[in-house]
Length: 504
Image (cartoon, rainbow, N blue to C red; front, side, top):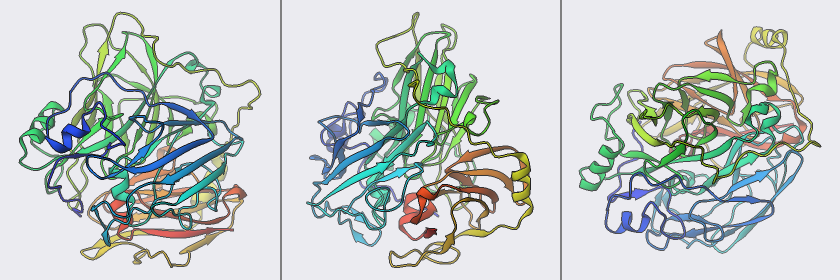
């Protein structure tokens, strides 16, 4: 269902406390195309503890993150077993004039630590009761478990009813749980590139918007039968179509998060294969130590999805780009056209000016959590313990025919200490990404039939009419409390496609 009308002006989701290299001030005030081909900007690194502020962009008035004057929200680096401490200050105005689901945005805010296997209770990953109104603050102390998979996660705001707008405004950043090179030693010493994909919203019929569409090679034809105007292009770390420097034959470690509230990325580097190391923060070797990598030509990242891979520089003289292929979102979906996201700048020698992977600390144990084929088969034979049905109509979006309200009781209660078979069904005419807080799940079947390439994820796409069989990992008692699951098209979540779950 088309739910995000084009704005009356051109805007970017990466608005921050002040103008970025992308040219946010210019973008809002004068609608001039930001520079194309700017070298990829690196987000700043930070370790716990830290202070993060929610502010209003001085030009646009929209919400933004501020961290020590940085133009890009920081990458937070933590280790398994560590405490993540964040003081989060809400310095936004009472209302910025933006319109949210139920009227003017009130600029309440909080944080969600997407993908981390941590407690859903205060002062940790509590998106239900921890909420800061303008002028208030929150203090988070999050216990990262010793067996947290080492990989790429992210933090973003999660105030129900305002999640979409704040995520569109760029209020998100990456989290890296260190130690992934324990699963793939070949990562040690490789240059690391963190790519945070957000989206800039364009104005229909605007000359500058049309030129931007042309700059990212957006075609005039759309795959599938979605209706409406595309209206969006990706930015990478705040830049439209940046250049990523890589030498021919050089191997780099790319870590990509789709931080868009509703734009899909089907990623490919022209005809070059990528060596996948992790998906949604989960190293492939965490559950299968004998198969820690997989060669892929492309990977579909739903909103909130993450992808980590070794990328090899093509031959000198080759023209190569990181692209998103066209995604068919269904008859009621929004167009998701093909586009160029970034260009590979092939240089004759390796650039060592940016950070490289450091080796994992010797004191950290390599954690493996295999799930035997026999156990998977046993779970496959059982009927689903719970079924999630996505539906929608002109009045809203629903899970099991119920539109979420904050006062709702949990829709389902599960006991921790177990793997449980769930089924997720999309009964609509558009795609939806399913996400559950606190845990990962194994996507192992479609409509009751086992698939050949099961994957552990925390956010999975469902095609229109599709039914997926999932093995939910509810084994860790650390997750006890009340949490949520929802569609990660955040306007759908804001409009009701969310429900509570109690972990006992």
